[in-house]
Amino acid sequence: MIRSEVEKVKENFEGLRDEIKSCQKCELCRTRKNPVFGEGDENARILFVGEAPGRVEDEKGMPFVGHSGKLLDRMLAAVGLNRNEGIFITNIIKCRPPNNMDPVEEQQKACSVYLKRQIELIDPKIIICLGRIAAYNLLGPEYRVTKDHGRIQERDGVYVMGMFHPAALLRSNQYKEEAFKDFLILKEFLKRFDGPNLEDSKSS
Image 1 (cartoon, one colour):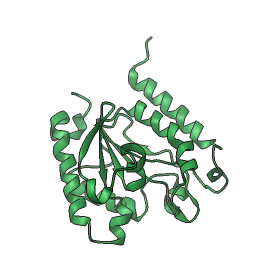
Image 2 (image 1 turned 60 degrees about the vertical axis):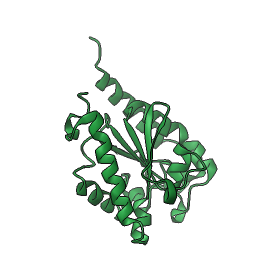
Image 3 (image 1 turned 180 degrees about the horizontal axis):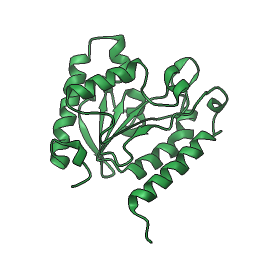
């Protein structure tokens, strides 16, 4: 019997998850509690990519479950989206840097193959870069979140948009209104593919 594409994706996902669990490509493997593969809909139309796991994420092995994650959930809900429907969330690097330091170039390069394979498996319609480090990796070093956020660009057949990282919004109220507008842009953009109901996002 020929296996379905969904079964193949699920099998490949589990293989990649196991590979990340045992990864020792950089020194972060010595300080992490749990690598954070990501979670969500494996056939998602929207892929959110953050920077790196924080303390709570490292403890639980899940992405965006601390204060930043709660804010992300609220902003999604405000535009009628839900992280459990048509969305997958991950990070540029899969292990927490000590003291939540910015991941260095070596760490980003070590994890880049994992993100690339996640993108290939999920095959999203749009990738959302949360913050400057995600945008640097996926949109280039010239990208500035404060200036270029909310602009949707096409890269290798996939649409990509930069947004403010929720952690930045928690530190300052300055960009919260603009960040909300970016979520509205995302919601409107999705209508050209899926209509208003993300539960049917794979039917087109």
